[in-house]
Every structure is written in C-alpha cells, then in structure tokens.
Length: 347
Image 1 (cartoon, rainbow, N blue to C red):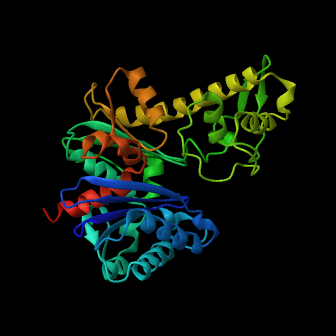
Image 2 (spheres, helix red, strand yellow):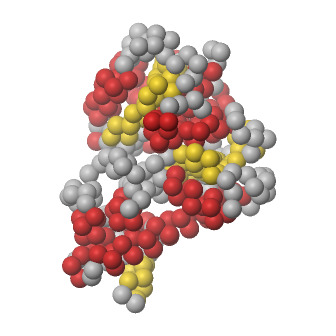
Image 3 (cartoon, rainbow, N blue to C red):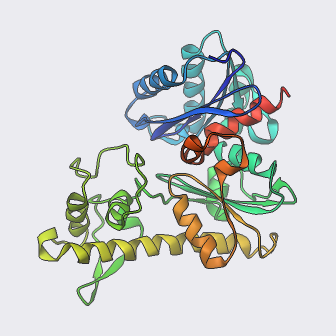
C-alpha cells in the first residue's frame, strides 16, 4: 500500500463514498457503500469499516459530508459534531481534515468552533476541482437523491448559495435523484390510457423503478430496499409504478408501464432543464459552456447537454484515474474531490 496515500470521505445520509488517491493525486480506488444514517450511527461505523477493508489504511484523510441533514440529529450542528466525533474515534492516529469551503480544511477543534462551515459542503469540493481545469462550465451532479447545479465562471465557483437553504432558493440544489426520489414528487398527474390520471401521494415507487423500466438505471446504483422492500426486477418495478395510479400491473401490458416510465423520466429531465435554465438566465456563462456531469444520474445531464447543443464532459475526465475506475470516480465526485484538494495543498 502507498504510505503517502490519502482517503477522501463523503459522509452522506444514504451512502458513504470513499476514494483513495496517491501522492500525485492519481485515483487508486473508489467505493460507494449504502449507509442509511437516519436509522442510527451504527450504520456509519459499519460502512467505514467496510470501506477501509476495501481501500486499506492511510495516514491522511479528508472528509466532507451531507449526513448531518438526516433526522437522526435534532440540529445540523449536532449532526456535524457527531459525525466528526465518529470519524475521529474510528481513524484515531491518522490525520483528519474537514472541508469547509472558502475556509479550506479544518481539523477537529476548528470544526467544533465552526460546524456549519463544514455542513453540506461536498458540492463545493467537486466544483472546486472543476475550476482547476475548466474556466467556464455548468457543473451538474445528479445523485440518488439530489441534484447540484453549479456555475463555474472565470475559473471560479460562481454559486450564489452556500448552505442548503440558500441553494434551494437559488435553484442550485434540487431534491430530485435517479434512485430514491418518490415518483409522486415528479408529477401531480400522468397521461395513461387516454386520460390525465392523478398520481397517488404515497411512497409506492421511486425513480429507481422508472429508470429500471427505461433501461437506464446504472448497474449498482440502487443500493437500498425498494419502496415495498420487494424484488428489483422490471416486473416488480412495473407493479410498483402501477400502484401509483391505483392499478395492478396486470391491467395493462408491460409496454404501457415502460411508456409511463419514459414520460416520468422526461418530466424529471424537464425539472433539471428548468434548474439549468434558471442559472443560465443570469448570463454569466458563455452560450457554448460545457456541462460537466457527475453522479450516478449524469446520463440525464448528458441529455440536457445534447438538447442545448453544448459539450458534455464526464467529471472523471478532469483528473488522473484508470479507465476501469472512471464511472466510480464520476459517481463519487465529492469523495474524490476532497482528497484531491487536500493533497494539492501539500504539492
């Protein structure tokens, strides 16, 4: 193992992502592990143990997070504090630094004094890496649950918001993803059987079901139980989707459920395009600025780029990584970015 390696950690509410980089900031390995943090801190401990078993030990670690938002914690401040305590205990003896945006990296005592500088800053780590090689772009990270849309202009992060509340208002954070988002969040009604049918406001199906039916769900992206805790097959997804409009899957051919899934997928792309259009309407980016895509749902960003007639650039192409790891690098952009940024401070 590389004695001078660094591991970057992205502590999410639903997944833990970790990336191992060497001293030259080349990516050695990347992992994503399901971590339902809202169910208890033991899930974080198990996920960290599994990640270390796969990546190996390292003397240095860089951490970013969004997990402080889960309702396990009464406040985001307490969430940050408990996540930092857990990492300090688990990685005792190693050097840990926590990404704090414009404040750079903080060590344990600095986080205690400024916990909200560390909260949900993972998008900023990824965008900061983009600025190292791109002067103008729209960075779009589409994950299982959320979308980050960040302008990069003049080689700098051009975001208007910093915390989640500001970013929701600015349109830079959209709670819509390609795995965990409930179908009822995408549309109030859908076309089916020649009618506009209201969508039931129940957690019967998720976007993972939609993209399983369209054939676009990336392998390994759906790491949590289905809404009904049932099978993850095309037929089971059709059954769950049918329930969203008060039907059984047997009431229509599979082709009808696939077409409904395609319509819902287009509705989600329209939401994404609306978010991109809101930010592009500021007029701060050139018309031909590329879209840099990250996250397991970046295939949606590629669709938006094609419709706008601008280049699509996978996040993984911006740094050194084996071709075999390219998809995982783009899937886990914040974990890679936070390690890349921290190691860069030592070069």
